[in-house]
Amino acid sequence: MTILVTGGAGYIGSHCVQQLISVGHKVCVIDNLSRGHREAVSPQASFFQLDLLETERLTEIMKSQRIEKVIHFAALAYVGESVKNPLPYYTNNTAGTLSLLRAMQHSQVSQIVFSSSCATYGISANVPVTEESPQSPINPYGWSKLFIEQILRDCAHSDPNFGFIGLRYFNVAGCTHDGSLGEDHMPETHLIPNCLNTALGQQSQVTILGDDYPTEDGTCIRDYIHVEDICAAHLLALNALEPNINRFYNIGLGHGYSVLEVVKTTEQVTGSKIPIEYRPRRPGDPPILAASNEKISKELGWSPKYTSLKDIIQTAWDWFQSHPHGYQTQTGSSSEKKLKDD
Ligand code: UDP
Image 1: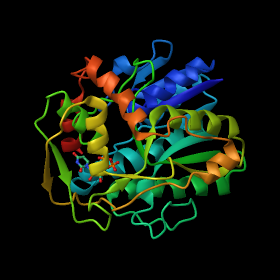
Image 2 (image 1 turned 180 degrees about the vertical axis):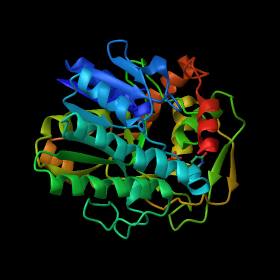
Image 3 (image 1 turned 90 degrees about the vertical axis):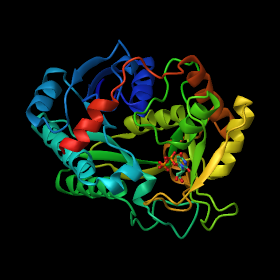
Image 4 (image 1 turned 60 degrees about the vertical axis):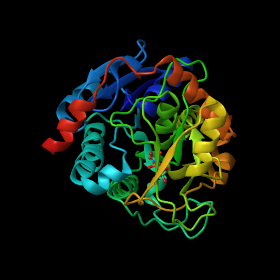
């Protein structure tokens, strides 16, 4: 089967492309390389550099490559940035997905696995969060994803052939177990990479963004899930896709760790002291996010292989040590330009 993977040069997308190829799928990647890395894309995948908003080109590629199903990762995904600069989030994520759905319609492709996010829940009264929990995002990133969720539901209601599975990720972390693929964002804002860069001596300290949250140590709690477990969930979702399927699943471990716990665990893994500094909260951050994963376990048979934060961070540390400057091709300056242009 030929699968179109949007955002296949990004962190999660590139890992998923590798897994899809390893189980025998043909993969076609599209990515605008605003934040992804060309070298992260498996040489066994075909690659087209284009933006999701280029509907006509996208349609041509889907037809010529005989695409059967789509896995849609391509998105801007920084909570803090989305608060400061929301329009690129709605353009790239929401309008970009509309363009993709139009291209799918024009090329008679009607099944899609969509990357949604725990950010669609906002501040949840019940933790772990189930899929039925109210969704009320507190940042534009979360809204940009929630709008797409509704659009997908509407497509499924209007077309009996259309089928989708939306996967709501919690905090994705770690790198491939064999060290072949890693995590390299520009700019880097994520907690675990920032801790590892500090351990490598590439930054002097880690900033703790808020110590006055209603949690035991005052720092935010997040549910960290290994990137290979996320990819495994995509493969299961891909197999479960069929006309008229209309489902959402959380993917997380089911419990969370505070920012300070992540820093301490990184110290254990790296053997380095990680200096910290406290700063005020980052706008858009909910205090606690942790997933109930019962639904995906029961319905798709998914279960995480990595259940310890230490093991997850170890896989990332292995890659960071062997790639202290990340991938060779850096894409930050063009992404900065893109955001300004929007
Ligand atoms: N965080 C932090 N310092 C950093 C980066 C992140 O304190 O340098 C906090 C952030 O406020 C959030 C948690 O760590 O509560 C996870 O943030 P990250 O950016 O890794 O993922 P997100 O939850 O935004 O997807």
